Image 1 (cartoon, rainbow, N blue to C red):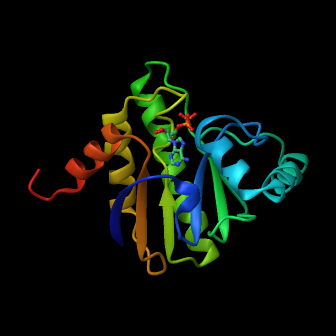
Image 2 (image 1 turned 90 degrees about the horizontal axis):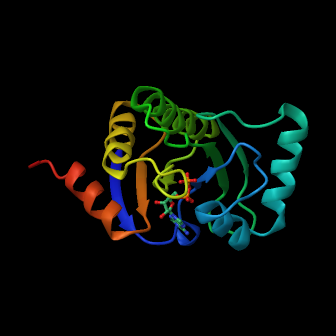
Length: 171
Ligand code: ADP
């Protein structure tokens, strides 16, 4: 899989799937979640409600899929990142689950391009460097014959620097 790093707003990205750093209620929140629901329109929330009524809350590390509404993407995969509480081992495993489960869902949907935000590194306060290492590690070890490209969409310069460094083969 090809890996790209872009600095920008994930709601503007032309990928078949964009990933949302949701919360377990699936009913919207701040940060990238708020931006996705604002730009994508009410159909995304309607589908989130249907999922909630069917399965209850979305557990940390799990992922579910909805329409992308008015966004340029076809689908939004909503995954719930861990809130950083200092338990590095547990939080790291849960963040790995987010990336792996999202990639698996994208593969099941048969899509070629998926864009990730820097899950958990905003309101959930996961250390950015560690989160970047986990994200890159999980993507690199996920072998897919279907997904061709993974885009890491960084919203802030610090994350952009971290990802560029992690993906630069000379480091
Ligand atoms: P979490 O609760 O998982 O920490 P946040 O939405 O607060 O979720 O932050 C996750 C990451 O998404 C942060 O790095 C934040 O800077 C970034 N982010 C916020 N808005 C956008 C956006 N429109 N596009 C891409 N990334 C965004």
